[in-house]
Amino acid sequence: MSEKLANPAPLGLMGFGMTTVLLNIHNAGFFPEVDAMIMAMGLFYGGAAQVIAGILEFKKGNSFGMTAFISYGFFWITLVGIWVLPNMGLGIKPVPAEFMGCFLALWGLFTLYMYVGTLKANKALQVVFGSLTILFLLLAIADFTHNHGIKVIAGYEGILCGFSAFYLAMAEIVNEKFGRTVFPIG
Image 1 (cartoon, rainbow, N blue to C red):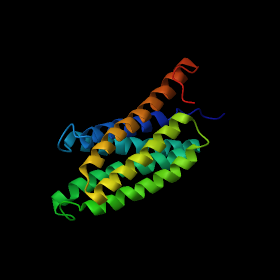
Image 2: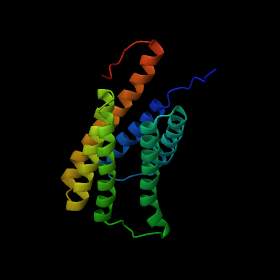
Image 3: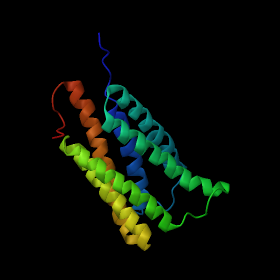
Image 4: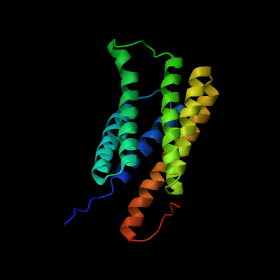
């Protein structure tokens, strides 16, 4: 008898989506500082919850889901480390924008390759990864050029990206619960 496993993707998508919306509300200029709330979300919901979702995707045999959730979970944990460690005397304070640009560009390249993996998946997942690729690109350009206006644009785009993950998570939960398509994902 095979064991039926719950779908861990909505957990990972919500951890990613909510944390992405909160950080990008800051990037769009609505709040001037990254505060403890964003950092806590990055560590626990964007970070740890996604890592847990990725481990559960591994158990289901889903290499894409495992790689995505564990990678982005540790992205959030790493990002919080980048913000916090220099305040503890570990590393350069503040982290040079060009270093952050390299960090974000590498994540953008990773995300672009992951986006290619979504081309055989539903349209909603393509929107999540496509918009995340654009977000990383915009954030990297903003850091490389020191252009605050690009960062604000990235913030608005990041809010849309986060809400696209939020939508997909809720669609998967609601559609499963109703046994039919209530929220289309294409």
